[in-house]
Image (cartoon, rainbow, N blue to C red; front, side):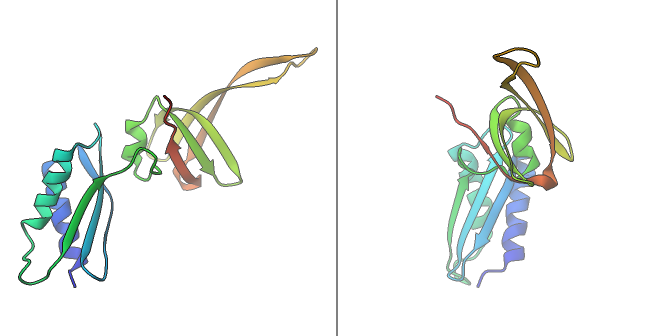
Amino acid sequence: MLNQTTVQSLIENGLEERPDLFLIDFTISTDNKIYVVIDGDNGVSVEDCIFISRAVEHNLDREDEDFSLEVTSAGATSPLINKRQYKKNIGRVIKVKAKEDIKIEAKLTEVDETAISLEWKTKEPKPIGKGKITVNKQAKIAFDDILEAKVIIKF
């Protein structure tokens, strides 16, 4: 069985050469299938996946351990996991599920070390009289309170 620490070190070495890329997840199954998910500040190209694949594959000996390797990018509908994913999506609409049954679909406006800031418009009843008015809302949600966040793809 492949050593997880060795594989992780190889991935990190490859990422050090490419600071615009970052690791989202990687696993090694019991039958030595290595699955790596990366993302990038400017997206991920096929060449980026090939680069990380080579950084791992060229430093493992198939004579010692037979393995398969798959390097992919985080999909457009994948949940946001890494803070860098939030930063690269500033200005886009995201759907956030947070603690206390909070669900918000809003524009991501800011990201800091502890939280994200969101803005959206909603219709609310007028304070006086009948009808509704459009109100601008804002929220700041701590990363610790986010259960899931996804970018909303609009065509």
